[in-house]
Length: 235
Length: 112
Image (tube, rainbow over all chains, first blue to last red):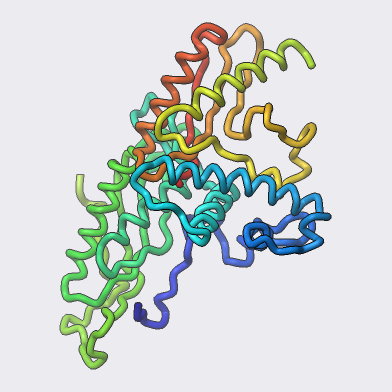
């Protein structure tokens, strides 16, 4: 897909505390210096690496990841609606579980105020970003979810979502942002059960649709920095 | 091992078994963080018989109800809230004899 320069988005930017790629890589480095992702890929690929067998950190990691891989495979196979995972998809899901374990984010309230049920911010952000990206051409970036009200710790009230998106260059940016907001609200309710008070959609950049005439210019002179859907003034 | 610790481990084992069997639960939070924070690890490495990292059972004293914390990974086609409620209800029912009045907290950490 063709993207404007400057439209790069963090892959898993879900909130403060999720720093740059280097910081993430450090999180996933074992005490022996190897990256967990490398160890897993080598183990999956059947690499004959003497270090993997001799190193207690690596061999423990391979054992745990084998168990996790089997569990992820079982979850996908048992779901009934999904095709079998190939090796690449399995690796991706296993590493996704690892990343969210390392950086789960804060707990956010699920369901009613009096219930004691929670979802971690990183998982919720992943679901909401995916929902935004069901709008054609939209790429989701940082998604931060915060309690909308101060109070108890952690707060049980409905949350406030702030989502950054890159959108295709179209005349109706405001309508597009509104559609993104509608789908994010839909996913928060349908996929999670997370009560949402407020969704701010911030358009951080526009990307020309694939195959667009590069000479085409926006007749309205739309500035992406000023366009967004914010329901702050609504009840 | 003290009697209290034995009772706690037995409750944790029950919670883990019941929670993992709830439809929509893919597995309990696996506890890979241990790999990176060896200093935080207490006791011998996890074996098949020990409750997973996704279950924590505690109480301040013998006079108050147990507090049970369950962390789950759900299947991606399931609504997180519905699965969390089902886990809470199943665990609460399973502990009604051995730990009446247990306070059950459920956290969904991921979907696969």
